[in-house]
Length: 338
Image (tube, one colour):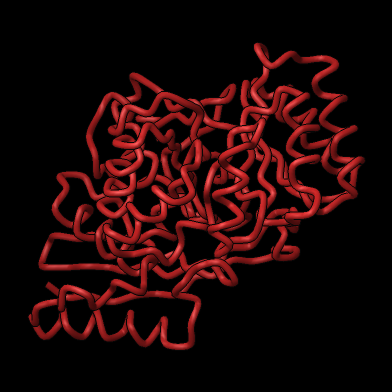
């Protein structure tokens, strides 16, 4: 088996706002495995400013991995432990290499085009007009669950925006999730959570910045609105540490991003720990190309999830990789004719 990698720059159709600034492009790396007529490919989608492996030696470690494979040497157990994006790409590349079809990693009713995955429509941060445009577009497209990134505008303006949606769509007709990306402060968080709860918001992701476990524990204990941990999970590698984190904070949900958490097996460990504690979960992509999204979607379907998943990011880029994925009326579909 021979290994190689290629860096690729994804270009956003329109700059997308997050709490980390305006995104215009996204780096990613494709890891390729070959052996005569066998071929496998995986995506190492490190996320600048968010991934724990956003570090100067990221590409060096990817190069070292390829060298070990090419020299037919064993990969040390912890070699990729602190490089979750590379671990994800390597795990996916191996699955692809051993699959009958390079891009069908988890054969199922989803990949046969018989069943689809319900997903949320994502509304990016921006000015009030831009966010209203996105919301109207998502509703017109048939989404029954919308996730809004908040924290960029004045909070009261964001509340008015949400009130506007609720005036037309009850919580029975439209599920609303919000993602604060750690934008709230301890001093006023309970007041903000109460106002969001009054609007029938389903849940809020990461209301305060990560690594404030004691504060997050206190908030989760008395919140009127279910809280989902997201960034809080990043960089927590050992099973015992993961269990301790969940036991301490006791969140209502956790958000699982395979690229940021070290791949599918790593996320399955999180799911096992969460379900043992009656903590809900769903899967979200992290700005991968369609190559990574395709793998995440197939794996997600096989988990038999019970809620809307965050897998609707495939249409963000002008130069995305071709894949048989389509979004239609709030569902992610696998087009077997593509």
